Image 1 (cartoon, rainbow, N blue to C red):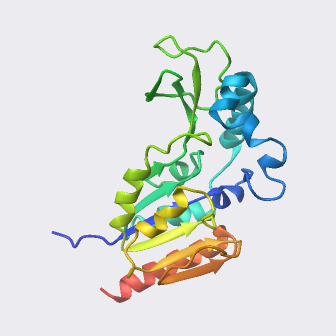
Image 2 (image 1 turned 180 degrees about the vertical axis):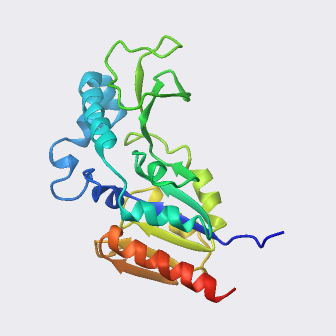
Length: 237
């Protein structure tokens, strides 16, 4: 039997998709400069004005369909030839899938899918289609975007923690670990494994052993890291 591949777990955030033209929420010029979180991305917003919420996510869905994976997405997919790679993403786009990654867990949902307001378990792939008031799921209830809004539980967190615990290498890409509860995932990783953060921003709240900050664009720094990891792996064979 071939030897078991080492496991790399990658946690990706808005920064990796920003380089594909998808605006981030927190950075200057991001989506929250145009929209108040409380008006478009909470259960209360949905109850108050579902039409506005649907229109907001329709626009995001349209941008997602037009966007293309960048070199960072392709670099992660390249790793799968050499490692057991698991991608945990905070992003709701499908750029990892289109770049070729196979094992992807979406913490905050998927913009190209919808679900009934009555049943969060049954998902419907809608691609780039819009969701309008009156669009009903097969169970007869209104469809809503399959996204986790602020104030809602993140149902896949426990699954994500289990994946991270088995990591031999942990890589954080496009997030400075300020979004919770996802930011806590680094603390689920073993203390003695190598950890990398690839992000443009300074780290202000992360103190962890064996942590290397590769400051810069994900599309530039991540391919460099991937090549180094593959080279190191080949040198140990």
